[in-house]
Length: 162
Length: 289
Image (cartoon, rainbow over all chains, first blue to last red; front, side, top):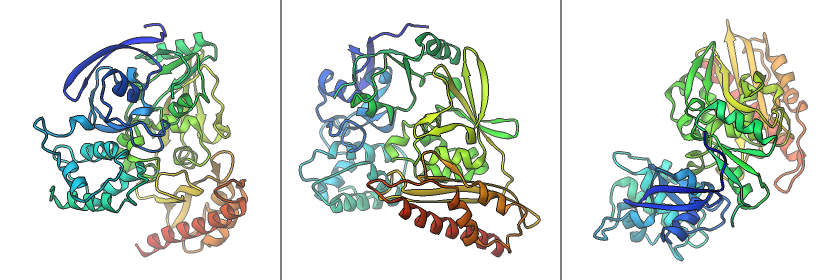
C-alpha cells in the first residue's frame, strides 16, 4: 500500500481531452478544473455544498465539484458546462430550453443547472418533469425566481428542445 | 477556500485501511462520500493530519444477503441504494427515507455508511437504522465487533466507534414481506434536514402486531427509538390501536431542543401529530385491505 502523501499526479479526461497535473491532495475538483485546467465555466459559489453552482458531471453523474477532491477524480471522465454543447457550438437541448425560456439572468448558477439536467437526460434516460424539478432543489438561483427554469424543464420534459 | 494541508491515502482493502487508522493513532479522518466532511475541511472546521479515503475499497460497496439480513456496504452511494430493486423489495421504508436525504447531486456522492457514522440527529439514515434494528459491523486491527444501532449513538455526531475503527457493514434484519412501513418528516425545504421526522416498521401476525420498530429524528441529540410506543403496540390487534395514545407515548421518549428553526414545543406538537396521522393512515390502509 502507498503511504499517505500530500501531492499527487492525477490524470483525467475533461470534456473529451486528457489532462494531467501534479497537485496538492487538498485541492478540490472545482479549483482544479478552474485553475489548472482553465474551465472557468465551473462557478464556485459557496464552496461548502449548499448552492450547487459548481456542479459538474463525473463519470455520468452530477456532483458538486467543491465537495470532491481533484485526486479523487483521478482516472475519471469529467464534463463541465464547456463540454455540453456540440463541437460546432450547437446548443445541447438543455441549453436550448434554458435560453428559450429566459431561465437565467446573471448566469452564475446556470452552469451547475445545465450539468445536472444534462446528466439526468443523458442517452435514453427520460426523467419526468417532477424528477427534474426535484433535482433543482440542489441549486440556488438568486435572480430568476425559478419560473423560467421551471418552464425550461416543462419544455424539456415535453421533448420540445427549442 | 482551501482545506488546511493534509496527507491523503486511498487504500483498496479493509486491512490496509485499518492499518492506516492504527498507525495514525487517532490522527486520521475518514472520507466516504464527503458531503459533510468536505464542507468542514473547506471551512477548516476539521483539520486532519491524514485523510483516509475509503472510496476505493470495493469490499465496502454494494447490497448483499447476510444471514437473516440485508447487508449494505457502508460506501454504497445513496443514489445506488435508492435505485436498488433488492432494497426496495426487502426494506421499502429505507428507500423511502433515502429519497429525503440531501439532494440528487449530494446523493450521487454521499454514502449510507457515511450518514450513519456521522450521526446527524436530524438525518434519516441513522434513525432508519435504529428503527429497523440494524447492526453496525466495525473493524480494526484489534478485531471485528457488531454494534446494534440502538447502542451506537452517544450524542450529536458522536458514536461508540474508537478512533481506529472502520464501519465495514450495516446489517438490516429481515422484516416479513408485506410489513407496514411508517415514514413522515417535516422540513422547511426539500433536501433540508428535518425539523421533526419519524420512521418505522410493523410486522403483523394474525392481525396483531408481532414486531415494532420506530424511531424519531430531529427530536433529540441522537436518533431516538420510540421504545414505549413499540412496547405498547406489541400484541395489539390493529383494530384496537389508538394512534393518538401511541403517539403520546412515542413523544414521551423524545428530548427535543430549541433552535433558530423551531422550538422544542413545536417539535413535540408536530411530532405527536405526524406520528398519530402516519400510524393511523398505515393501519387504515391495512384494515381496508
